[in-house]
Length: 385
Length: 228
Image (cartoon, one colour):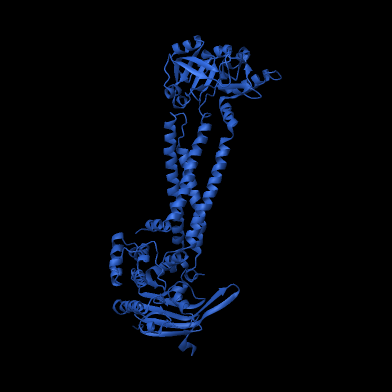
């Protein structure tokens, strides 16, 4: 027998209680791992976007489109190299699978987003075929789309002039991302804005966003101010921001995911603290005479404190690591199951935060019972006082 | 048997219960030679267990001196006392106080975790101790799988395993039937006579006291002859 063997034996003295407590620790850390990676996904889009791009949208909301006729004015702003624009189309594939589809000006978009890689011939065909569509690699792989295929997509927002919501596009290209981050962003499709603008029933000549490619990233603030000043007090006031801020702002339309995650985790860990803390307190309370016997045998106050604290650490460490491991496995399964679109991956930082949480929780739940065990007076404890 | 194992000099012990102070021992003086087997008897509240706790280093006197095996244990700190207990004294309690999560051999091995012995050496010592108390065949059993007498034998093996010279036993047969009690007391007698252990037991039972070499009577915190 070893000291650690003695700690484990004591931990499982009430097997059902320990297993239930362990399950609650595992569940808490599973939730922690998954929610942290969800939070990471929602914020990740902001980390790698270009520093030389600005997004222009209507000041009121990006759902209120701006006129495409603003392009020449925007291009004339000093520091702007190229202007692209993008209109949300949405679209539903087959029965009820929503897609990310945007109507764009092909060649402008190609110039502003060199991170998307596609043979030039396909870009040219996209630009010169009115009903053309290009799809990202992820999306094409997910639905088995091939170049030359007719892709039927219905729109819940935009009916055609004949009133039909059924659209059909010719897939003329499949683009990829230049690196891992951009490859993850190939779950979108683009259609030709000219065709969309002409064929749809309303909202002519308008778009949701302009994307400004800057000559120099350091001029982003000055260009933003100039653009917004240019359209101030006009019917189409603008809000110009960096692509990173725009992405974060877009996520916040859903809600402050980080804050939501923090509150959920706070509630989970607070409850866990009470559950595990109660288990540890009960465990010490019901074996006061045994702890006194340990001291009688010659174990010091510090050793007895160490035994109790070690039980708390073992409980939290085993449950916590198992929870994080489950979250990692589950995340990998979700990522695989969604064809990489929902990269629920626990990176090193989540593991490190998780391990720090395990250590803190062990101390929080173990320290008070351990101090109580340390303070026990042998004669009182043996006499049941 | 003339060399002294325990010397208690003018010891008083005062307990504080709230605002009330209770003096349990009043300037008690006592000598127990090495190799002695002493039974402490007396009515409830006479201070038997308090005296035993002081001799075993579980508690400290309010005043007076206690020397056990040549060490002034009343002057040791809590940590030093723990270390002293680990190497110099074995305890046997009325209700055995075994660890329910450990087997008989695990319980006996527990004090050896405080030594530098290797795992193999520890196992060997445990086997010897269990053999001495006649429980070699029950080594793997948990306390709940043993009878009261067997549990007490395991407790005696635990007290013996680190080879202390002094055994202190608080009502070691108080929870046992007559026959089993006599077996346990016989075992203590063997440990005293054949292994040279100095034994101090507290008991209410005159028949149990007969197994000791001598009996000391306490009353109102004093040895009876002192009181007289």
